[in-house]
Length: 138
Image 1 (cartoon, rainbow, N blue to C red):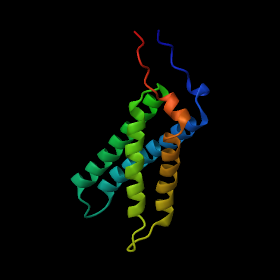
Image 2: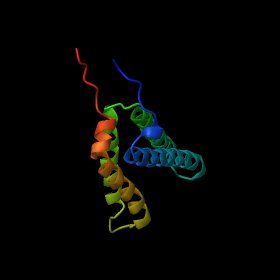
Image 3: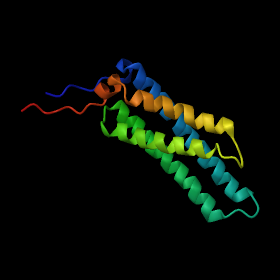
């Protein structure tokens, strides 16, 4: 017999921390998408199609993160892979902000620190148990 999933209120602290960070990242992706979309029409000489495509990519990322959050609340095992993939990509973005040409240290740290926290939480035993697939016993 399958039991009903436990609500977020009973979730371990590591899950709550990950949900909070992923939610902030999704909101950030939406904000960047809106900003880029507005800039597409306001800046002289910008490439309209390319800028709108970048806005759509940001909205797609936000949708991906929202689905990951929803799946994590529902104890879906695939959410670990989704969160892991995005955090690794986010660390790559953070390292790209560390280049010598235009150092944006606040952005690098704003991307790097949450990603490391989520990666740390992903491999905790409490998260493994929360997202464990139930093996049918028949």
